[in-house]
Image (tube, rainbow, N blue to C red; front, side, top):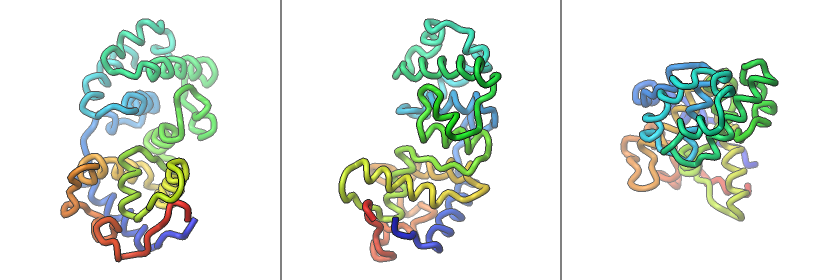
Length: 228
């Protein structure tokens, strides 16, 4: 992997976190460090817009406030509580995870990356999100919003397969996630992608990292190839 420009990375981290402190979205799952509540939010947010999840998050938690409560419920009842949110395999996996956490981990979600990824339906992104938001671990994340920001800011170009591009973006995500501030940084990069660095009509003039973005200033630094 070609080395990233250290000064660009520092400025990217600093400006992004500072922007988030002023403009970050106030969302209910950001007001807690409870691993269960954070996991529920992350599972609901998979392939689903924030506005839609807001209508389901609190009612689901009122019905199932803990892993144990969810584990004791039937699959039919969990499916009923999820009804209308779609992608129902997520509900089944969350139910199975609650059962496994309750029986194998004493009702506590593991804080070990390998252990948490062995749970049903928890992939690399969800594990990183829960570890950073609930346990303040230095774990990177890469959702579609974060991937778009990294691609534009660091000028990543597709050379080869989508799989190689995805692997390259994960390398960059891990390289730029700041130690001790992963929770804020991860929320910030997702918010930037969702609110300003959008797929269509990005609001570049309002972007806090536009000075260092190679999409805005392609001659600022040498572009980073996906296969570098």
